[in-house]
Length: 452
Image (cartoon, rainbow, N blue to C red; front, side, top):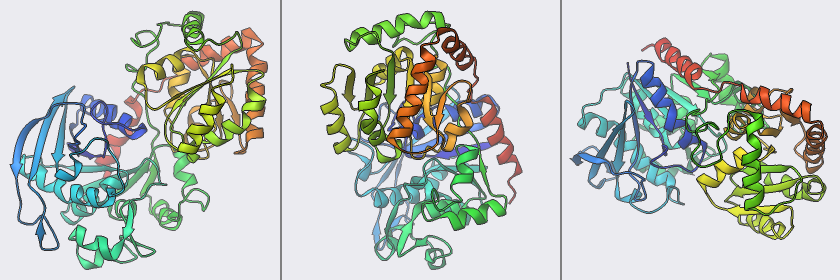
């Protein structure tokens, strides 16, 4: 079986968050389980890798209105049993991944994918698109008679643009631009394209698959998602974790340890790095965004800091960044802005607990990583956090409020002060299996059930 994944980012070549992490490991595991696996992604100007150009040219059908799309190029990297194809367009030849013109850019990318695959001799049995950036690819694949799967990694981001302007970017038949397909309140909606045209739709945890059929989490698409559920086309498959990349026994970016007793060295390194006192350390590695509940954490800090040191790593919202920068003057709060992969490893390894007060969390990887390092999660009961954090390991709370977060942190601190109970939780956490083997087998089974 030849499976072609289409995504806007793939680790280690391009990454802004969990989507890139998933595409960095799932295709490798699928290849290990017998699938011929190709990943297609944009050839960004800041791509961390040097693809070998294997095709360059134009195709007469690739036009926007009457104007031809610029010359395409396709680059290839093959590693760990996976073929990575990168599609080069001038609109992507700039530093960074995402910009204000992304709907236009990913319409062009979506138009180019099947053409590029044809020119380099890749014939998919299944096209598996990820998030809204692949939505147009799913529409074209469906019209071409290919079997298709679409995975929602985050329903909040949908790729919307005024349909009168965007329609000419797609070159799709007029019937696809109506409210039963791509149109949504006067906009082109590329997330909806993936949902409508896929043979099967998955999302990244069973609990999130249920949540998104409600008004609270459905982002306006809950009616369509309810219909897909009734038709048996929507399921939740929990994400796995790259357990080689995130292994406390071999991690090159943090003090290595194999059990809770060895974790003290990693904690000592983190404490020394930020000149913190002997109070336990609460870690956060996150995008600074409303979704992640970072504002709840900031509001809870007056109640949390008497009992915890707090180390936050992340970038995003300028207001949240400014608030955390102000709090960094506090002797028990450290904040480092932006992405810093080695520091993230040191926080996961050295923190005692890890806070994820998310308003919604489709799956989440940070809670899995933290438990792998014996760092106990303090999480809101939403999405994949429900599916992955057992009550006898983490500290869970229901309400998205500073008070509820503070209470969960207080519960965690009381348990920390009972060393035997805390160590027992750490041992259970480090024994959990978050490998991709099971989820990948579920995807392969899903591919096999698709009919055309």
